[in-house]
Length: 110
Image (tube, rainbow, N blue to C red; front, side):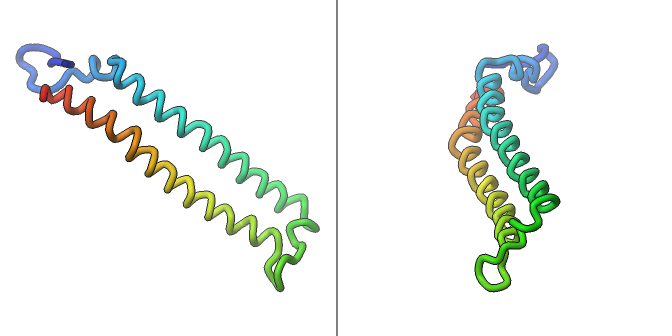
């Protein structure tokens, strides 16, 4: 589908691939996941940092024994990171990888 750059070239036409509707859709799908998730995580992280810096009373409030709100929110940073990794892996496996395989398949002329 994408052909080659010229008759002597054995490789795919990467410019044609990049401009193809399939590749444009792939990039758009990727952006629709990455930008919102990155934005939400950065806001969540900045809220944690701001609370840590300016809300000492709230962050040091005990929840269970010596475990306080700040410790729980700090651990939730790790939990949210793991959830993002899991969600991206699932998203890539179900949405991005099939599209990329199809583009590669067409570029190889199969």
